[in-house]
Length: 116
Image (tube, rainbow, N blue to C red; front, top):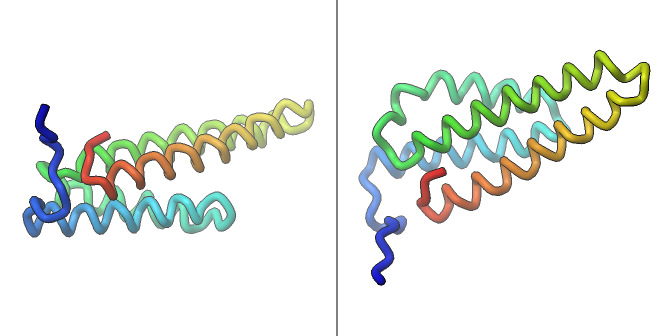
């Protein structure tokens, strides 16, 4: 069975640029676990580049990053709102864990030039 996944050498210039922007987005999301402002910068960058990455290998990764951001934000807000009953701390932890795992997994897949 042949490996049909593209390698870094098979990428067009547009794919290569989109891949690099995607990896920057993942790095900023990963940094968002400890420095929250970088998470908001990453999502702004993601929406700003949304049209430029259409049709490239990174398009599914940009969708993955947006979904990761919104699910993480929902868990964090729910956690803050329910922190007074101690359930919130579990939700905040779950949000941080979700962010870390999805960011790590997505970055590995994009580095390998694989879609999400």
